[in-house]
Length: 275
Image (cartoon, rainbow, N blue to C red; front, side):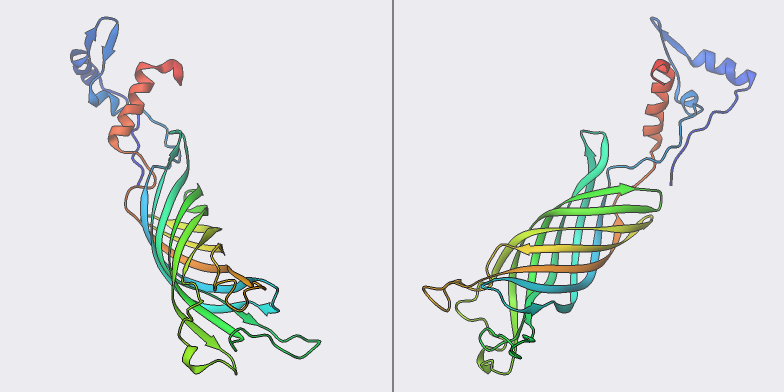
């Protein structure tokens, strides 16, 4: 809710009282708060430094960057969940478009091989033609936003760290012992780059965001020399995930307090040449 001070005409009796209240200090007049409350301050759209918490849900479209290459398609996995904290502020005290966001997410990685149309064969790793990892991750992101009264554009970019908590292998030749068990050569820690963009609808004190993000892992899924000491194989995650987030404002997104309005009124009264 935006607070606005409006100019009102003073009656003659009020003017007399005002003259008695005005104290002269050299060539500078000091005006009482009652007078400052009558000064008209523009009601422009004003974005504060504000913070919020969010809850998220979505799904992942996963692949791996393999070298040598494997014939694969996107692996769709629903069931992403997370919480986040966002803090927005002004760069150089002027530009209210920046901030940061940290979160804790339960998400997924993986890969799914598809049949070679020429040979009719499908590749596998450890007998699996499809592998899904359950991952707990912590992203630390720079946040960007451009606001309108009830609408905003949002973006983020930064880094994440994660841990692969479970693995699920699917295939006709998977050893049952390792269907849901990591091998000694599997790597469970993960880290990399993450970024995305989306739109938001604002109905203070809530915001609803829809975003698409890309996550590029820099850690291998398994040790490169796991299958040969002479011919290395590399696999790093590349995921696209879509999510919806509901945020709650912890402080005011827009509007100015009475103290802020009085400060602007003082500038108008004492420094009219700046207006």
